[in-house]
Image (cartoon, rainbow, N blue to C red; front, side, top):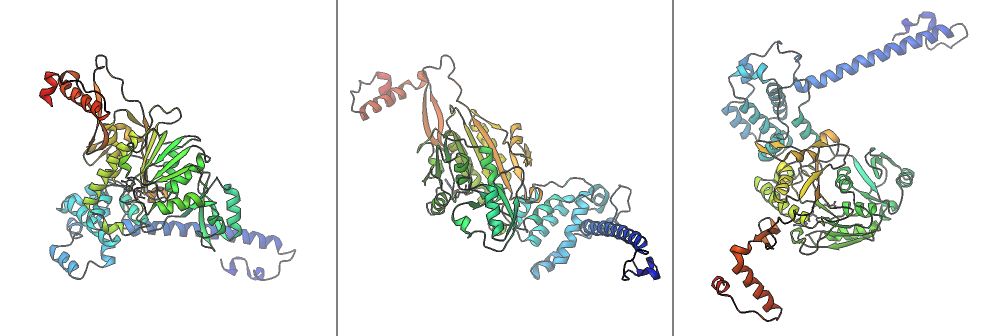
Length: 519
Ligand SMILES: C[S@@+](CC[C@H](N)C(=O)[O-])C[C@H]1O[C@@H](n2cnc3c(N)ncnc32)[C@H](O)[C@@H]1O
């Protein structure tokens, strides 16, 4: 607003007097109102420019809009020669890739409007988009495609943001620094005050946790304050709270943390259990149990026993737990913002091997739960991966292999439902009870949580009294039950009895004719 708006004799620098007071006041109000209006208009323009930047400048509101000439749409895809040129110079230039990604997204989202007449196949645009994503964000093509497929391209208004790109963008940005108050040592508000006094700017994370704090900025290293060293908090990603909240271990229970190092979740469970009961904190990697032990001591957890077995040795090592947490070893596709090496070092074979290991571990975890537990009888399965073969596929496998378990609500207030079908595979309908967390949606690391209730195995049917049960190791791990039929397998059962008696030094009855034939 110029001075002339106020009037010559109402120069805004002139001193305010009783005579000009009212006019100056009205003029200032008017100026403030106009400035607010201009600000709003400017904001709108900036917002629109952001959308246009990615979506192209056209108005996408209806299908009757002016459409690019089909040849122009087709020309977005590079020719074989152009591809070769791009390869020769070590990849396309950044602005070329950005533009092409924008265009491919625009066309794929409105295929009927832009793509159909272009004479090119939809798959060509999809393939190009994946190649450009891999190039632009620095992934190997296999992983770029795997992650891209999580967010199907649907016919949608072009002004809607494109989810796959949002996901890849979010992986470029670090998640907020968060800490978990150790309620064994302090209260959140006391900890917050102590850290504020040291120059830390923080706030509670959200209503879903009463122990989490988000650190906005800090003038001191947050992993080396006296409060940290005294075990008042754990530096821990917010997503890591989720499986423990879902498991909800109770005081005096017996709990197994199958893959526990460095102990973020073990120490959280110890606090929820108020240092009562017992937690077996296991990790196959002995070297990693050092940091676990250090955290257990620093945070003052007195109900934790650290051990180092391959998780697949449970329940042979020990069983009968009220609750089991399996925070499984995984590919880490949910934590790419923390570990960018995942972008290039994961291959199809890694996912196959991991999924296999996860399936073995989950069955062992389930078999380690006491179905008769009066307070529990639960297993929580979690990963920091967003890949379906490490999550829903593992959960579905467990449901098929162990008819005595079912999924229950995780009790978590947010997160998306797990997939019940994915790329031609169908999972049990209850898999929708599992929860997926995404960096671009929930501003936490990519994460997956499933909660199982373990029931007693079905009672033997009438007439099955003579059936004996045995345990074998199979590719799914131990505890796969096999059943012997008294009639058909009598000879084998008798022989096994003879061996057991012999081993115990007892008198072995002579072989009956039939048993001898079997031996
Ligand atoms: C996702 S990390 C666990 C993080 C931990 N729960 C925490 O909150 O601090 C997975 C762990 O699984 C362990 N691991 C890998 N294979 C295992 C196996 N076969 N049995 C048990 N632990 C295993 C790894 O050493 C690793 O520490």
